[in-house]
Each structure stands twice: as structure tokens, then as C-alpha cells.
Image 1 (spheres, rainbow, N blue to C red):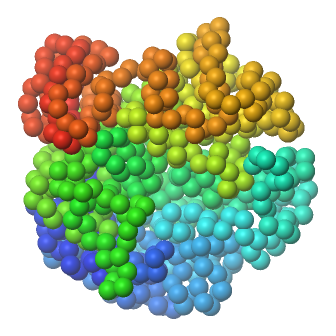
Image 2: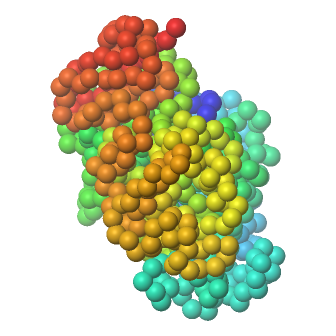
Image 3: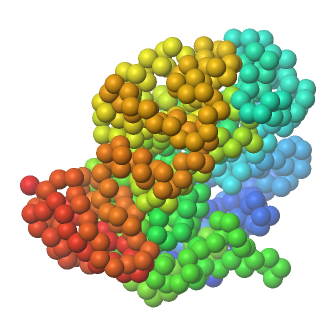
Length: 607
């Protein structure tokens, strides 16, 4: 993943104008790339995304003086700023009312609404023409945004809206092997104990899910393609998209077609979708191998809630709980932000500090760390060759279409979060990636929901994964649909274990180790670490979390103290790069001290 970026994203809403001093700090720290959000819509909390009046005022009536003002105000505080600019394609309230359709919550409908497409494409055209003409020397790229929280997520996957129902049968005739009538009942949980749709009796539900995902993908392709045709060749395109393991079946499972047909330069995902707690790894929601093999970068939106963050949105409403839980004090802020930065540097990801509601980066301890982080990023980020993780999690979109949205087994992120809590790094891939990427370094491979199996898929497994001493983990009702037929006995045929057998089962095969766990919840943090060690995954450090490449090693711990660190090779020199100190020379193991909590980032110099 090339061309990584380090950015600062300005706050939303009225908090933008309370944070100019923080922008000036970022300027002085050396961050010149700024993300601005000239928006026309309200967010999922009902609050305005933007503190400025609407640019898109009626149909084809636009006030781009308001856009110019947003650039000019930033430049008055940061004269050397360059920009990544959001293009908000969500409908303003007046258009939502006029069309009786909300793009924020019914995204996939938009592709079938001719007037919405025409008006929104006209806005995109006018917006890009103005930016390229007036600000082309400043704008380095555009974030093309639409759908729930700007992420191209279909909120109402199972809602039988008029626009989609009218086109469903036509779509089925073109793309599905069977002929379906539009489902006239709510596509609820199948009338069995499990949550896998039977292809013989419930085929209309997976067809509907494919249709909704395809509609969202078609929409993304249309607007990425249009954007590419209207901007300079060197300008980048970003999109909040391809979060297929975080958003489940909700509108992004067809993302590989988008990445092949109209590839963006980078995709963005929010940090808040992965664990924040001090002491474990955090992680990110980009599917690493899917992006890496297409040379698409992942931009990590660091919206971590620091101890000084503002969460009071109005006099009547303060955010709390869930993703709004944050770090408790400046020591945790520093350790946490260093962990996030270290992870991104190791994995060659882009990074932006997102001051979401203001107040996030005012503490002097945090600012001192950011000043140093910018220096470290500029010197070392490009030196990493990318992840050296030996654990791979695989998601199979074809299988996920067969799952009801409420199925616990559909929630890939929960399993991944337990790996992070165990302090271990993991790469992620789709089934299609297995055909293309080098799998030799992975010692432990975990399949999320491999409920759909056929002879060709099993042959690929045996050839590329179930070999070379590797440990492969199958969960839930793996292989229950085989060659198009649903049968509980298919699970035992595929895994060798009965479908309902409780617990975690390990079987030594000829040249690999098979693990079967009908309940993913049995794969606890401790069990995952035990499996990793048994599989031969290199554990760099105990009682700490780590991310590693061949050149960089990031280690984070909650309790502090001295740790022994073991490398998988001999290093000529080991340098802790935040403190710029040589820790060890000519060694494959060393000890170092950590603050409580603390994060150290090492450069591993080799001959």
C-alpha cells in the first residue's frame, strides 16, 4: 500500500469554529494536509455535519461562495494547508422531502430513482468543477461520501421499499439462476434453530441480499467513475467503503466488484469500530489482503475519544457509552495514540487525527507526543514493508448472503476484537483473495462463516491452506450448504465433526491441524492465544500487544514495567524511535522498559 498520508480532520458542526487554535497547533507540528467536510446533511444524531449554510440550496442552485469561505477560513489559520475534501452526496433535507426518500438511510433505493441520480450527479459535477477550477492547486483529493454516516452503508437491507421491489424481478432474471418473485413478507429468521437460509426453500432472501448489495455497489461505481472523469489525474479519490466484516450484510458485500471496476485510491474506516481499551491491540476495519493486492491504501480515521474530548453536543444532549467511551487521562491518551500511530506505520496505512466534536488534542502531553509523532512518521513510515502478521481471518461474502442479519455468527468483528484483546495482530482477506495472495507466512487461519462449500472451494482449501503445517479453524455450521444443498450432515462431511458437538475440537491431519468450534464464543481471548502459540505464530512479547513488520515493531502494554522481546531474526540495531535511543545491538532478543501504560515503537535495522 503506497502513498500513505498523515492528515488532520476538522471537527463537525459548530465545534469547527471553536478549534482554530488546534488547527494552528497541527500546522506548527508539521501536518499540512487537512480534511474539510463541506456538508449538506445532518448526521445520525440529527446534528448538522457543517456549521455553514447549505451549498446545495435547490435542485441545480448552488452557492459555492460558501465552499470558498471554508477553504479561506482554514487558510487564514494554516496558509500552507493542502486539502482532502469531502463531497457530500447525501440529499439535503429539502430534497429528501421532495422525493420522499432519504439517501442516508435508504441508500440502495437511490440507484433506481432517476431524478435523484440526475440531481445528485449534477451537484457532483458542479462541485468538482468549482473545486478543480478554483482550488485545484490546493486540493489533493476528494472523499466521495453517501449513505449512513457517509459510509455507503444500506441501513434498511430488509426493508421492501417501492423503488427496489419494482426492479427486483428484473435484476433476478438477469443475474440469478432461478426466477424469483419479490419477497412480499419480511425476510425474517428461518423457522429453524439456526440462521442459515436453505437454498431450496428460502432462496428469495439471499437473492434479495445480493440485490441490495449489488445496488449499493452500482451506485458507488457510478459516482467514483464520474469523479475520476472530472478531476486531475494526480488527484486522489477516497471512499468510506469495503467494511464488509464490520457492516455485515448491510450493503457492502459486493465491494470487490467496485474495487475492480472503479477502484478508489484509498478507503477510509473509523477507529471507533475496533476496541479502544488500553492494554490490548486496537485494529482497523480495512480488509488488508483485498486492498493490498489491488494497491489501494487504507486510511485509518483516528476518532478515539481522548480524556479531554468534548462530548456535550447541545445544552440538552451529551454523548456517553459505547463508542463514546474514551481514555481516562493524558497518560492513556499518549499511550493510546502512539499505539494507533505505530499500528498504522507498521502496516503502511494512512492516518488522520479526527477532532470530531472538538477538545481532543489540547493537553500538553498529547501535543508533545503529536509533535514527535509527525517527525517519526516523516522519517520512518515509508520504511515499513507492511504487516508480518501470521494470523489470517477470512470472510466469505457468498456464505454471508446465506445468513440472517440477526445471526450471531454473522458478526465477524466480535471475533476479531477478541484477537485484538489477546494482543495479537491479524491480517484479513476475502475468499477470492485466497486465489491470489501468498499465504506462506500464515500459521493460523480462521474462517468466519464458511457455510457455503462446493467441490471447487474444498479443492482450493486443500491445495493452498490445509497444508504446510498450518492450523485452520472452522466455525459454526461450516459447509452446511454443499453444492447448493442444505443438510446438517454436510457439516460432518466437511469438518469431520458433528454439527452440534460442543466445545473446541482439534485434530491433527497429515500435514496440517484442523480446529472446529461450533460456537465462536468458545474462542475466547485465552483460547485464541493458546491456538496461536500451538500453531507456531511468533509471539514477540508476553503480557503486551504488538504489531510487526520486517522493519518496525510496535509494542503496547497497560501495566508498564520491563518486557523481554523476542525477534524472529537477528537485528543489527534496535532503535526506539520516539525516544531516539539505541536499545540493543546484534541480537534477536532484548529487554526494555514501558510506561504504565506505554507504547514503544522500534526500528529493526538489519544488514
